[in-house]
Image (cartoon, rainbow, N blue to C red; front, side, top):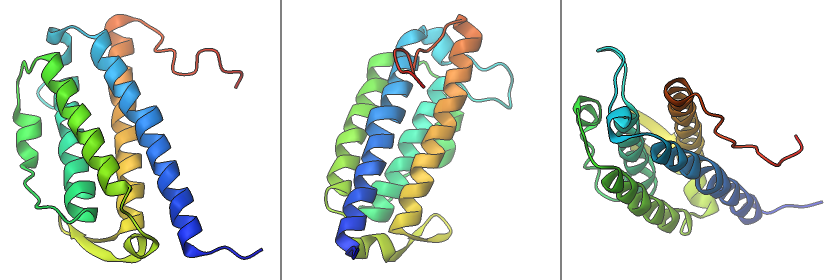
Length: 168
């Protein structure tokens, strides 16, 4: 059976969208809704990040890698500020940042071609293909959502129910 590059890119982009928009973003938003403002900005020690910092970091990372790196927009990220922020930034502001980010990411993903997945671009100090940019973003987002989930479970002693009702 013959496959064409456009078919692969379409399937790949749909999978990236599923992982980001059906899993990662909703889980992060659920965790943010579960915590109080004080808990969102809680740091157990100087070498740990708060859920608020992780949320800002994810926004910065995805803007840099997808919006600027893949989408060709200007890179305006100031990475260290994501970690230096002490908060509190209100929950609604964090959710607004995520909402705008989702729309911007979807707009870029809707324009990605098979050629875009192969083309190399500079992101941070790296030369990355569109494919490697998207793999990195999903992996990185998922990794940090796991951290946030652990923090929520530690602070609240709750089951996040990510797989509730599914016969796994």
